[in-house]
Image (tube, rainbow, N blue to C red; front, top):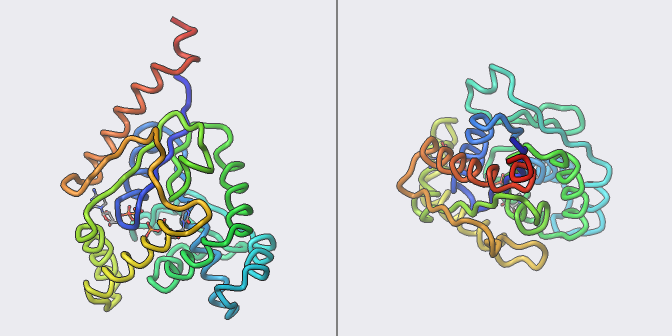
Length: 239
Ligand code: CDP
Ligand code: CDP
């Protein structure tokens, strides 16, 4: 079977990471979380107290930073981590999952120079196909020729509640209203930015999983992927 490139984009809490990871496991594909790269860079900018609107400095920061995504260790997997994230060789998998880091990531993600650096990394990482990559601009910018594009969505209330539950489980004492406001503000910034805004690609399948769990959504994507694998020119040449 040909090994496809699958792009999953959507707003915060729509289930991209969980669904992409599960679909990748079912398909035997590699899973890549592009948002983790923006988060890792956001963490570094916060630690250095950099102004999050200093475009030149943040672009330089992106250029001098090494971010690596690896499959989770059994310990991190048990703690609910979908992959291991290394920032300049330091493991930051859990540190990047705070609301503060998410907000910093979405601010530096508005800078064209920063995006250029991270997009090039993502294209390198997924160049061989057999990959499920998720983010905001995967189907529109990173892999515009992906064989399968999904725009994953869920109601804002459902998305905020999902994220709030995760914070609760980690012991973060944020209220549901605080999480709702953070998610909505980040979505607004992601949708309204000039460079690579969050938008559904014209050829992306819209999947609203408000009333679906991770397993159901992942299996729907696997079904669509199997269909695309059969339609692929490589397969058709063989039959
Ligand atoms: O990556 P993204 O922000 O789009 O979402 P996620 O981190 O995959 O999902 C946020 C939370 O919602 C996780 O705890 C998932 O297990 C949960 N979720 C769910 O309950 N039902 C779904 N259909 C999708 C995700
Ligand atoms: O998990 P969640 O959906 O909340 O966010 P994420 O995927 O970890 O991404 C964090 C932030 O990085 C987003 O709010 C975007 O601003 C940015 N991002 C982006 O601009 N482009 C991507 N391909 C992925 C993330």
